[in-house]
Length: 366
Image (cartoon, rainbow, N blue to C red; front, side, top):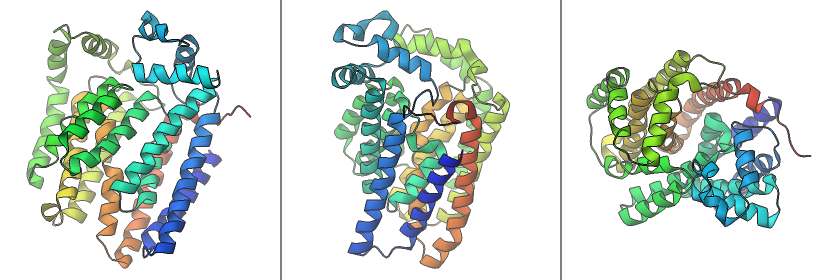
């Protein structure tokens, strides 16, 4: 794990420089160079890996059988989206190597990460530190990771109120993962003005529904013969929580997820309870993040794989924390940063230990 913690140390130190910077022209240029360098390192490591990461055999097999356009409609590839399959075909043309496919996918991910963090976050390297703690900043990406970063970029159109552009980008993301369409409600939830008490009530209600009737509702939707949607839902319902591939128990994962979201809620309330009503961006991002929590409590008791759709909404926190920091003076930033660093370290430790068999040791083609 030394490699991963070393990268985290470099990013964390760079994030510290980010919050201390007075944003003059020179400092901005230096920080941007550091930011791009970190992304390039992550891209290289994600591209040259071999037999490292989750779902490795499944994705390698998909690459080997997807060499031409006719393979887009093969029965074996029905579970994969056309955008992802097209990238595999292009990789065969360019380099006929799975690592070429990894590079192309990673290139899309890190380009959208750069654009999203630069345009939407006041402290891009802080955002990178938080995202790295959540999922190693997409180093061991799957096709949903591509969709997640594209949808994070689409959030700029939510903020600016450009519905048509937002829908277009969501459709593009769905070419890599169909569940991207579940991010559409974020546009309308963004502008809602809810009291903190209302958010607490809604979250508790979602826990009750998740443990109670949400499975019944999904069974009804799956029975409506909605094509691949119904097939996917039935697969999730049949599998249930037997798809837990981590070292933790299913109950443990759900409890950890609940505790994590509860801590986030408390931090948002403590630092933003007054600013939220006066800042539409902070209010909107909290709304988006909150909707992800509700979806987590509704879906995780049914199937852990189904709860991964909340990842689109969870990304809001990589923008929210920089907003918390930027609203403070330097002294308060230096007080909060160690807390954020400790929280991020714990999340990274959990991410690494949860999938230690897939991440450790890191193997490359070299």
